[in-house]
Structures are given as structure tokens and as C-alpha cells.
Amino acid sequence: MEIGQNGEVPNSKIRVLRIIARMNIGGPAIQITGLMQNLSPSRFEQLLLTGYCDNNEIDYLEERGIELSEIRLDGFGRSINFFADLKVVFKIRRVIKRYKPDIIHTHTAKAGFLGRLAAISSFQRQIRVHTYHGHLLYGYFGILKTKLLILIESFLARYTDSLIAVGEKVRDDLIKEGVGKIQQFRVIGPGLEIGELISRDFALRSLDVSPDKFVVSWIGRAVSIKAPHRIIQLAEECRSRNSNVHFVLAGDGPLLSELRETAESLNLSITFLGWQSDVERVLSFSDLVLLTSENEGTPVSLIQAQMAGIPVLTTDVGSASEVLIHEKSGFCMSYSTKDFADKIELLSTNAELRSSFGIVGKRNAMEKFSLGHIVTNHETLYLELINQSKF
Image (cartoon, rainbow, N blue to C red; front, side):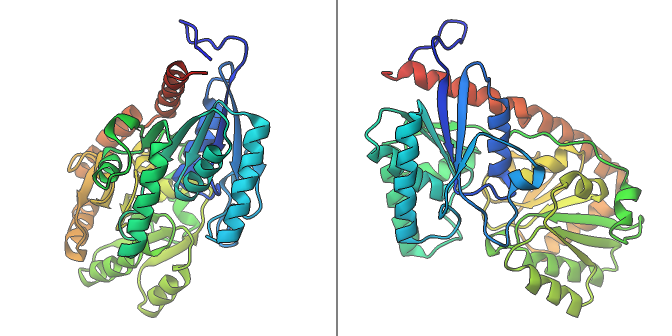
């Protein structure tokens, strides 16, 4: 298949089969939804192949009431099970043989593994693209499992036409470990939109928090790699300084109950909201958005915060440093309780600095991470790959 000079697709649309294990609330689900809804319908036909979320997760599509062209597969979720996953590979192969996609685009680790295995073993001609929304090279597994993961990713990269990384640091980490070649990679950051924010005072009423409090919000999944225990440390440190700070944790996960119990036993100034489908409400009452992770891809919460004109404070992990402008729209640095508490105290007592950070951050996020940005870059990549192929 070739593309005309004006970018039109003669005879038929380009079929894109998009594969992800589950559409739980988070960056990958937001990116995929944006692509499914906004890629040119005159050029592309898209089908989403996904599984179901775990009981302690919320499905982004169901929560938002979003309808996409999709197929749901039983057993295709977060957990790893050899026999169940093998069945999923055969199910994906059947979809591939029936749908006959021109492009198979896999997202995140598990779907990248099972989806590409199914594509390779289908013996059909197709272009294969995989997106690393982050990676599992650091902080997830022990040495042996990590080495095995690298071997698998290196093998699959040989049979993948294009690799997308959400940030330069993510790409560089992968190449350093021998996953893919530089010419295979395209760096495409997240593309987002946020809705209108309500007034801060109105948003705070549901929290039962005084408007004079400096509200620091942490948005994400309460799992070890996100290091949410650091919120407890920071809340204790801020209290010892008599800082007028209140922390909010918006998210769920296996560590949430333990964090809540610890905060209650120490009588810390922390509100636990659980999963929030309305991120705009959280942003409306936030004075600072905090990220404490030990590993990241390109953090969506920091982009959303800057789009809302809110300063950010983050650990220097993954591609976090590429999202903000250090000391201009926020702070990106190695974690220590004292240093992070210093920055929180600085921003809580300096309204002029907060305003300046907010203005710069909003401009930065809108220029780099608009929804149009991700859509245009994917369309360009797909058309280039089609023209280079032997279809």
C-alpha cells in the first residue's frame, strides 16, 4: 500500500490493530483513547484489543463512558500466568488473521510481549510498532528476572519495525541495555487535554480542608515503585516545621490501606481520596502536584498539573526531567525528605514564585504535550512506515 502525495489513502483505509493488556486509569489508557478518537478517520481504521482490569483497578473507558471499536479478551490482564497467557496469544492470532491489520501497535510490557509473539507467529505481513510508556529495567525485578526481560525485549525488537519511547531518557535506557537500535526509535511524548477547572474554594469544600491550607496532591497508583510512603515522611517533616501544608493522595492500589492506617495512627494531615475519574477536581484544589516515584516513563500527572498552571515537584527518574523546566515550572531532583520539604515550604510561602512557575509550566505543557502533538506524530510515523513497506 502506498500513500498519495497529499497523504490520502487510495482504495482502502490503513487498518491499525492497537493492543494493550488492560485499560486501567493511567497514562497509556489516556494516550490510546486520544489516538483512537482523533487519528484521521479518512485514512485510518482502528480496532482496540484489550483485556479486563483487576478488581482493585478502575477501567478508564468504563469510568468515562467512552465507546471505542474494541474486542475484550478474557485472561488478558495484569497478572502473569503461563497457560492463560499462551491462550491469549492464540486468541490474538485469531483476531489478527480475521482483521488483517496493516499495522499492529502494542502498548506496555505484557501486551508488547504477547501481541508481538502473536503477530510474528501469524505469518501475515504487517508493520509492527511498540510503545514503551516506561520500562521495567529498574526497580521492578531482581537481577536475573531483569536480565531475562532484557533478552526478551531485545529479541522482540528485532522483529519490530518501529519502537516508540515516551521520552528520551526512556529510549536511552533501553538502547543502553541493547533493546533496539537508535534508528528504530521515535520519541513521542504524551498528548493530553484537560477540562475546565472549578474554583479552588468550591473544590476544597468536599475535602473539609481550610482554604488557607497549602494543598500538595499526589496522583497515581499506590504501589511500591511509586514510593507513596514518602508522603508519610514529608507530612511528618512538614508538621515538625509547623508548615501550613495538607497532603492529598488521589489514587488506589495495594498499599493504600497501609498508608491510610499509618497516617491515622500518626495523626498526619493527609486526605486519601481513592481513585478519581475527575482529575480536574483534584487539580482545582491543588497548589502543588507531587511525584515521588523510583521509576517512571513520562508522568502524565505532571503534564496535567502544568496544563492547569500548577507547580510540580518530582524525583529525577525516567523522563520526568523532560516534562518540566527545572526551577522554572517546578523542581526535579533526587529524593530526600529534607530537600523535598524545603521546596514545599518555599512554594507554600512564596505566592509570586508559584504564579511564575504556573505560567511557565502551562506554556511548556501546551507547547510540548497537546493532543494534536501525539496524533500528528503517530499519523506521520504510520504513513512513513506504510510507504517504506512492501505492501
